[in-house]
Length: 153
Ligand code: TYD
Image (spheres, rainbow, N blue to C red):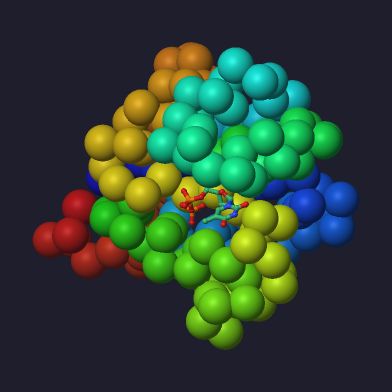
């Protein structure tokens, strides 16, 4: 099983979409292994968005991510990183396919509902950035044999 990080961004809290977005991941069959509300800081965002530090929108992005708390989620499933990225859709909500979260819920490049880890390596680093080990929970979903075939898990 893979684990991946999803952040529900301030736009999602402000627009009252938290339940709908979590519901999508739950309905898909991903296991919620961790979840918490947190106020992001400049230093955690400098790390998290280091690959964008030279971009003209960097400060605006950080300000937007600090404008309210966010909700961090650890989602688990087979191929969870790829599955969650596919559900998330293209960065810009105006380009994201209908049926994806960004395609269905936003019209913006920056106010784009969620962050989702883009590789297994990144997911491990990002989960460690946002969660302490004891904040990730290991429990067995009672419907596991109906989510996956016996030879899949
Ligand atoms: P990026 O890591 O490129 O995309 P993704 O979130 O799809 O993995 O960018 C991180 C965030 O930066 C993105 O979710 C929104 C913001 N952003 C902008 O504000 N303007 C832009 O032009 C781009 C490319 C990203």
